[in-house]
Image (cartoon, rainbow, N blue to C red):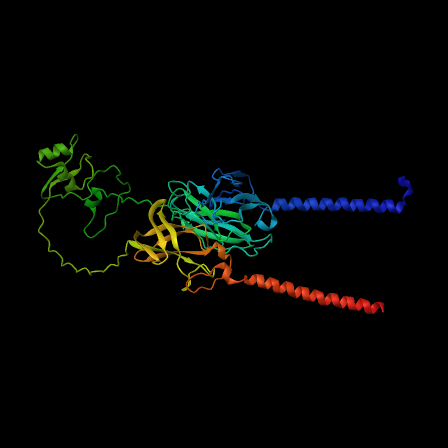
Length: 514
């Protein structure tokens, strides 16, 4: 069909729509350009009060520390996690997967964030960054935004999440263990903990640099191996305030002998306009009369003068307050001081006796394992102890003590431990699932005891809340789970309702035909 067949008005309307369309596209492109110019870009920044800013937008590189799967972090960062042991329960302490994520609901700002995730398993780990050339004494503040997603299905929110999800960030102001990252060494200063489920929460921690190298950490842990256990980090920054400069001591100006000689009694001599920086005069002015004195002439040495007057070099230096053997021409040295009458000694004021409170230098660490029958994470009075759980206690990677529970004499206290941080790790049978962390860093105080408890449930018990009378019930005698009964009741009720509706519809149709 030739274009001449179209009415003139139709062609004009088409051209008008085309012009409006092109104008709209131009306006959209212009607005996009303005937004790109005005929107701040995330990434590394360096200024007078900032050591680094990380937006997780740039290049990610693999960390060889991981053994399987993805292990990608921003350049300059590393990964850490508690490795799984053969004795760990099913689904506990697996290596997480580290990736860059660009999903809109998992990014705080910009277009990307750090993702740390495990499927059908738990992890304790995170990422870290080592910062060098920090001024000792500087005030440093680390901040970051974190979010967790824990669900036993594919829900975009945390549905039936793993309990005890904990996110936090920390600073090691002493630079790790021999320069190596060590998040559980007890030196790390941690922020408050939050679960931050489905919404970004800001974490912040401040401390003072005690080394030219500091290490910042991101930490996450959870309890149950649900379908998705994922953590996201974004917008991290490390700011600092440099320590104030140490003031230099101001040297006291030396006063020449001329000024002293011309000063009138009762007046204060003025210091000369020019300070004699090269003067080697002793700190105490030699006595002008009485005793024995000597004026230094060219070529004199302390040794020669000491021999001449049958004195030792040290005695002359001590009498004249000299700190070196250097002498200056014309300097007056005291060889023998004038004998002064003994002055009456003042009556000493009795010093009050202060009784100091001495903080004990040792403490204790008490450990126990128990059946957490109601799944609360804390031991109730009727919850029995669990035997054959191995408790390993270490300090900075060195073994301190090992104890195996007997289920009768716990809490068991390891005594005479030096005040400080200790890492406790519990080793349990594969027949149990832990309801509390299996390892933690515990600070032992002076003259007191710290506690470490491990809650356990039998794998066969599932998620049942067990009512105990001293011994946990077997899963077979507890009856069907309450949630199963609720589901069955709902299904039966729905079938009844559908039956009534169907009967009503059938009755209406039969009467309508009549």
